[in-house]
Length: 417
Ligand code: EPZ
Image (cartoon, rainbow, N blue to C red; front, top):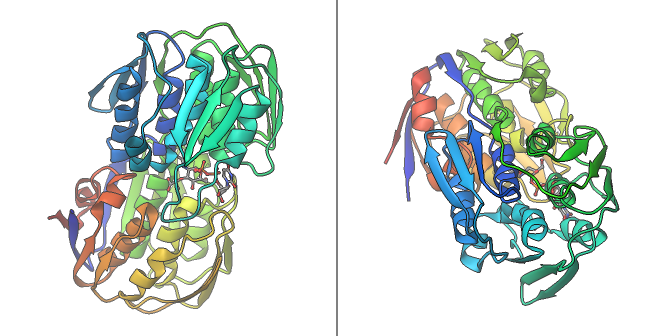
């Protein structure tokens, strides 16, 4: 199991580029199952979740190739609709293939994703959407079968929660359904709009993505396309927080500043200087950062739940008391116990964390409990003067290209062992 060895206390300085978004690459990879032929995906991040998705696509019958950050997926041959248990276990979000399998083959069999480190991850909204489109859904012993032998039919789908994955599965399945689909209370994340752009480049007819009502007019067939993934807003936020927490100055390039939501403004409220360019955000850390009031995670365009852990690690060094409320996932504070080893003074109570700023973190050995919690621990280790070890790098590698390279390019002393 890989471990990061970090000698912290060094202010990070410099520029770095933001890679493509994991949470856009995954649904776009699923959508590449729809057209017969070779879809080219540019800017796909080199992370283990995309490798897992490629393994699933290959198992389903697609031919995949990777050259650097360019992936080609040839779904020309026969595609099966069954994702085996072991591959489902490898990546929780494999249920993102449900809509594509159903639309392409009329059949999909997946296993329940099973809870993960941050919550139970139910898929009731996904199954509701598939049923609304005419699929017959049966469930036995943790395996889910969806069947639509005569194809899918457009319908009105009203999501009780603006679920990102359920919105994506519904859009992908509806693209080849007969007639029109309306998704109400759809998720508005930038990754939804990116998926819509990719589907429309394939010849689909998706309108309104990015808003709460998405309309899809089904078409007979889709053709391959070339699609460039949008930048990863969570990785960009993590890089900016690395500059803020180490007292340095960092400029992240190739970003879409608007996708960062409230984060630049919150960083300024703590005392950082933030300059936004057309495709970059530059931060100079505050000398003595001050805490912000209450930060509440919300669906986009609110504060993103995926940035909650890294932001809380930074908040732990801001003078005063901050309150974080995690409204999206039910157990996304697993990393707090590990963060306390660095001297953080945080009390959690179900969805709330009360963060009392301390003057400095001390080096520690910690274990990453999940992807974003692991990133939070790396930030704490970068701030703590001395040598820290973060075990469980595999969690972090799921969503970040090798941090020893990206953060290393900013002067961080970080090695993988
Ligand atoms: C996506 O997960 C992201 N993953 C998550 O990123 C992100 O945290 C989340 O959206 C919210 O922005 C990918 O895109 C691959 P949801 P998803 O469906 O689609 C409940 C990361 O760190 N819910 O919007 O699973 C669910 O339990 C990952 O990059 C249901 O109740 O998120 C949760 O409380 C973590 N029933 C809430 O909705 C359902 O059928 C938000 O889930 C589906 C979801």
